[in-house]
Length: 377
Image (tube, rainbow, N blue to C red; front, side, top):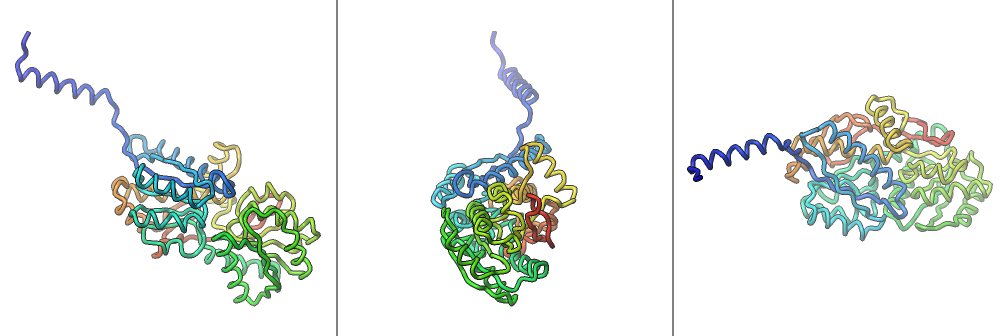
C-alpha cells in the first residue's frame, strides 16, 4: 500500500509528538568542577569540603526537579600544586566546566588560579585565606575570610581575655598559608604592643618539635602563636604539654587549626587552643541549624568550618548561575557572582567585597570539652 506524502508527514509528526509526551523533559545543568585535597597532607580539610559540597548539591538538585541542576565533577589534587594544575587543565579544557570551586590549599591556588584566570573561568576559593589570591584576577572569588580580617580580631580578643603581654611564635616556613599566617600575626602583635620573645620554624611533614618547644618553654611566654596546618599543629600541641608547658600557656593559631582533626589527634592537649574562624557550629540561625542536622544525619559526624564554607560556596554559585541564565556563559556567571549581596547562608549574611573577597562576620573560638566554642565575636 502506498502512502501519500501528506500522510507520511502526518505519521512522522505523530511519532515525534508521542515521543515528546513519553519522554520527560530533561533538566538543564551547570557543570561545576571541584578541586579538593582528598588525599595527602590536607585531606582532613578536603574530605570535609567534599561532604559539605555533596550535601548542598543533593539538596539543590532535589529541590530543582526539572529545573536548573548542578552537574558536579570532583577531582583530587592530592594536596600537591602540580596535581592541582593537572586537574584544573582537565576541568577547563576537557570537561568544559562553567566554574571551579577550590582548591583546598592556598599553596595550590597560587599556581592553579592563574590558569583559570587566563581561560576566563571563574574560581570560588572556599578555604584560601592568604593575601593575594583574589588579586590574581577578576575571575577569582572566595567565600573564606582572609587571615588579614580574622587574625587582628583574634589577637584583640585573646589580649582582652588572657591579658597577653609576651608570646613566642612557631611557624611553618615552607607553605604559603603558614608563612602568610605568621606574617599577619607578627604585624598585628607588634601593632598591639605584645612582645615577641622569639621565633621558631619547622617544615611540612616534621614530627619532632621538641627542640623548638624546649626553647620556647625557656622563654616563659604567655602564649604560643602557631602558624601550621592541622597535622603539624596536632604534634605541636601534644609535645608542648608533654614537655611540661602548662595549659595556661595557650596555643593561638590561624585558619589551619580550624579542624576537628586537630582535636581528634591531639586529644586533651588540644584543650584551650584559640583560633579565629569564619563559622561556628553553635550558630542558632535556622539555615545553620538545618545544615548541621542534615550533615550529621548524612555523614554520622558533625560538620566543621571547611564543610560549611563548601556548602555555602555551592549555594552562592547556584544563585549566580540562576541569575545568569543557567551559568553556561562563564563571563555572565562571573558578573552575576560579583553582584552577590546579602545572601542568607550558613556563614551568615554573605556578600562579596569590591575586590571579590568574603564579607561576613567572623568569630574567635577555643577548644573546650573537646569542641570548638565561641570565645568572642
